[in-house]
Image 1: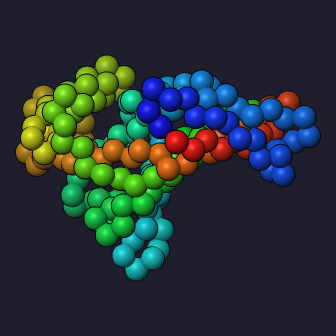
Image 2: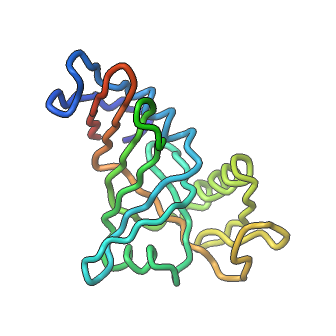
Length: 177
């Protein structure tokens, strides 16, 4: 889902309140852009699920996240790149949850990595340096695991996005590229 095209919302009336309207793409894109934390769901080699919270950035129609190669989520993605990232609120009567389904792939484009490093610094005060393989923790940063290892940056281009809005009406909306 690139920024040059606007996905059409499709309301799922069977999972929505009577009178509900589809959530607009602008509202969903704003939620993805404004979220600081996501839950990443991956599958272990033996089929068991793995879910963990992590920061991610929405840029040019894709979500980006960073992890170490030794972490369970990275090992899972090597085995199976399919994953889901979710963000939203824990309130029942109001809010918007967004679910992004896709495949994680390594991002090594230096210009994109430089932009992402600025985003992590500006939005989260989390300084990264860019190298040819991804990110490195900034030497004087406060981020966890400030070692010398290069950290892979993964991009998830959505295959499907679902939004779940709550308020006066509950609405489930689907977006496809």
